[in-house]
Structure formats: C-alpha cells, structure tokens
Amino acid sequence: MAQQPNLKSMKNSVAPFEHVDTKSSIRQLINTLAPLVLLWYAAYLSLSVSYWLTLPITIIASGFVIRTFIIFHDCCHQSFFKSRLANEILGTITGVVALVPYQQWKNTHSIHHATSSNLDKRGTGDMWVLTVEEYAESSKWRRLAYRIYRNPLVMFGLGPIFIFLFSYRFNRKAAKRKERIGTYITNTSLVVLYAALCLAVGWQSFLLIQIPIFLVSGSLGIWLFYVQHQFEESYFENDEEWSYVNAAVEGSSYYKLPKLFQWLTGNIGFHHVHHLSPKVPNYNLEKAHNAIPPLQKATTITISTSLQSLNFRLWDEKSKTFVSFRKVKHLLKKTGSAVETVKIPRPSVEGE
Image (cartoon, rainbow, N blue to C red):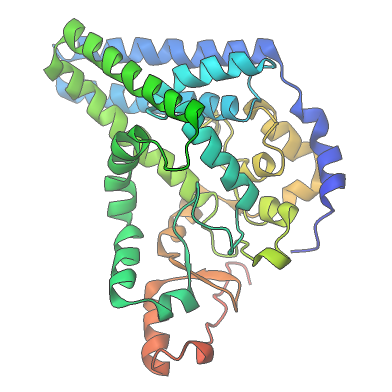
C-alpha cells in the first residue's frame, strides 16, 4: 500500500466527522434499546407456543445486544454524547446489558487504540498474536496453549463464556479506585437485573431466553473484533517503525457488510476510520470513509472473504502476512526449527 498521509493531515480530514449530533444519538438509543426490550418480551411470550419460535427471536435480539455494545463503545470514547457525565452514565447502563464494566473496558480499550499493531506493546485490550519466530522459539506447552487459544471452537465458543461471564467480573491488578468501583456497580446491577427477571418470568424461562442471546451476541462480538485486525496482509511493526496512521488504515479492516448487518453492528465495520479517530460517532463512520479518499484504500473484506481469516494464526515478519499453523509446521520440520532460516513464501492474493 502506498505511503499514508501524516497523522496531522489525516486528523484534519476526519475532524468534521467528530461532531456529536445529540438528536442522532438519542434516536439510535431508542431504536436500539426499545426493540431489544420488545424482542426479549416476545421471546418470553413465544415460549408458550414453541421453543423453535423462541430461538429465531433470540437470535434477532442478539443483534440488538451487539448494537447496544456499540453505543457502550462510543460512550467509552466520549463520542456518543457531548457530556462526559452523560457518556459515563449511559456507558455504565449499556455495559450492564452487554455484561461489560464501563471503566474497566474503557481503560483497556484506550490502550488497545494506542498500541494496536505494535509488536512491542501487545497484551492489553487485544488478542494474543505470536510471530512465526516467537512460536518457533516457544516451549511445547506455550505452543499448545496458543494453538488451543486460536482454535475457532475455543475462541468463539468458550471465549465469550470466559471473557464476559468471568474475566470482566474481576478487577485488574493495576485498576484504580474508580475502575474498581465501576466493576462492582456493574456486577451488582447484573445480579439485581437478572434476579428481577427470574422473579418476573421464572428462572427456567430466563435461561431459555438469555443463554442463546448471550452465546450468539458474544460469539459475533468476538468475531467482529477478530476479523477487524486479523486479515492476511494486515500491519504489524516494532515500536521504532510503528505508525499510528498505518496501524489505523492498514492494520484495521473495512468489513463491508450487508446494510442490515451494518446497521445492527453500528457501522463498526468501518474500523479503520474508528481507529484513526475514535471521536467519530458510529453514525458518522461511513460518511468519513466515503469523503476521505485515503481511507478508501483500507483492506476491504466481506463475509465470505473474512472466513479465510480462520486460517490466519501467526504473523510472519518477513512476508508481512498472517500464515497458518500448517504452513509453519511444514517449514519448521523442513528446517529443523532453525528460525533464522525459515523463509515463509508470500501467500498468493486473490486477483494477482
């Protein structure tokens, strides 16, 4: 990809789209939370008819949970309302719906934005990524742990259960007082909300509705985060060569989704725009993409092409691409795990 304009130039271009439109925010809040509540109630009513009717309703409801998370996400970036206090209050409320503590996630996510695609600053707010060399030098137990972690059944099946039900329930060691209190507030609110729902509809009905909503929304949420950074010719560099603009435009994808899915996911597919300027509200991301030519050079993936990312497991610093375990295993056998002699051929790109 051609050299990107500098940060100042790109920031100036995207600045007009950072404006918060309160009416648009309120409208989005209504058309997200109201349908979610109605769908949840409809799922409850459908239980008396057939669970096969309930399941499709819960799947649709899970889409609105994702859309709720995007509102939460904007609140964390102070880009949903103009008022910091309003963002914190709404972020805390929507965080309860999404099972994510506001202060904790806001802090780790800000680190993700500041270090995305930086090989020397991995480990906070991102997914575990090893380079080919690191994998080759790892012990067999570390390799096994990494392979288990990168297994799709684990990442998208067990991942949501571990992250949303367990990991987010505890404070980080480095958490300050405000973050710790925020986590306690979210946990307490979840207990009160879920207890009230169980009393209102019965614990069996609650579980029959909430479990599929949680599993579908959680898996899709992790999938969105995964494909937005794990694509074949992504961008990763060491700190001295790392560029914020390149990390945004080359290290984040444009996930081109059908309009309905784009709406349900709050335009988060324009992830390259979001990483360039987190202050852009989700309803302005597409506008910024269409108005700024350099942003249109970001890697575009679709639902079908994004499925290829399931084979992208290790980052090869030589070819600047993600590669599969199979390819690395073959080459390591061939070279006797001598990392410095491993030469990963550049994978062919569709259309070349």
